[in-house]
Length: 327
Ligand SMILES: [Zn+2]
Image (cartoon, rainbow, N blue to C red):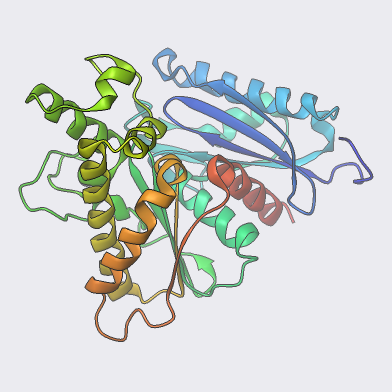
């Protein structure tokens, strides 16, 4: 793998989530040449997690028969609010982190320059720069998994917002007094159409006595349900799975329509684990509903796409950030 790339011309992108850490090594053309994945173990606390990130970076680099000296910089994404200037994670609820100096600590472990960013912003950067060749002047990235994260590209650049928290599209309220959200509010898009919301809806329906093949596949408690299980159930003609996924797609379509009305972006890209698993089942309804809710004329020529980067969006964005900041 260590090819004809001159020494010092590699970048590492890191995507840290509540359950897993993914590290990817990229060459100077931003092609991924190797990756390494490990569990986060957030319950062990920030110091232990940072050590694990450093180990993931080491192992990814080692997988490529390289050493850290040939890595010019590292770009890492964290969930929650991130102070990119000072390299600190201000608050990350699903990690239980409050004011963690991620950049400084990682640099201590790795002895290479580290740059950090919010994870959904990083995914947006990856999609914009690598998948779309940096072309759209305006773009909204939407990533649907456990939660719903987003990022905005305006005038060709990632838009940080006044206090650097812009792009939290998942907390747009779509149902006043709707189900409770992790942010403390009610009826957010995330509380209605994220993977966790869908699983909760299936579980509640089963508790109410509705029949589904999912209980045959996973047992009555629906343990370890994955997005792919919903797809399999739909393929078998399961009414409950079809209804829940259809409603989530409609709900997402309304949110996309709102985003078109507010920002009139050139492109809206949808990614994340749930979209990867259910693209074919959800995209037609998302696009149709978005167009129904867009103001006449505002969606003309606006592209609504599914990302092809899948799980690699975050590490790709990390490499983009590392290359850009270390120039
Ligand atoms: Zn919320």
